[in-house]
Amino acid sequence: MSSVFDSLIPATEEARLQALHRYQILNASNEQLLDDIVALTARLLQVPSALISLVDEKEVVFKSNYGIGGDRVPRNQSMCSVAVLQDGITVYENLTEETSALVDPTVVRQLNMQFYAGHSLNTPEGHNIGTLCVLDYQPRPFTAPERALLGTMAGVVMRLLELRLVLARKQQTSFRFWDPVYKAIGDQLSRLNRFADEAPARTDAPYTLAPAINKEATAMAETIDQFIAATLKRV
Image 1 (cartoon, rainbow, N blue to C red):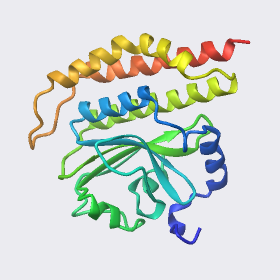
Image 2: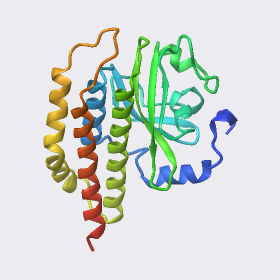
Image 3: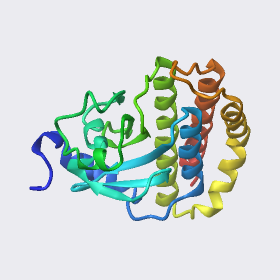
C-alpha cells in the first residue's frame, strides 16, 4: 500500500476490508433509494454536496453522489479516510484554518472544499467501511442538532446497506423489494422533504433544526430495522 499513508491504515484493516467487500456495492449501480437519502441529507443540512463514501484498499469510492463530480479519489487524498479511523463524526468547520495532516490536500484544494463533516458507516461487527459526508465551499459552524441528524442519516444508510446484504443472501432481487421499502418509509421521506422545503435560508448564524426532523429520521431507521428483522425470519 505504498500509495496510502501508513497513518490512514487502522489496526483492523484486513477485517475492515473484508467487511466492506461483503456488501458487494463498490462496483454496483447506484440505487434510487440511497440517492434520495443522500440528496435529502444535503437539503436538510443546507449544504451543496453530500455523498456516501466507501473506503477501499487504495481508493475511496463515491456512491450516491449528490452535487460533486467524480466517482473515486486516491485514499490518501480523501478526508473520509480520516473519518473512518474513529467511530462517530469527524468535522472540520474551516479547512482553510484547520485540516488533517494525515491526507494529501490535493483534492481539498481542487474542490475548494472549506467545510467537511463525515459520520462513519459502522457495520454490526464494528468496522467503519465508509462515511455519509457533507461538504461546503465556505466555512460554517456545525451545531449539535446538525451533528445528531447526520449521525441518524448515516444510521439509515447503514441499515439500507444491511438490508441490501440480507436480500442478496436470500437471493432476492432488489427491484422486487425496494418498492415496499419506499412505501413503508414514504410518509417519513415526505415529511422530511417538506421540512427541507420549509427551512429558512441559512445565514451566517447556526441553522436551528426542529427536533421533529431527527424524530422522523429516527423513525425511518426503525422502520428499516423492521424490514431487516422480517426478512431474516423468512425461510
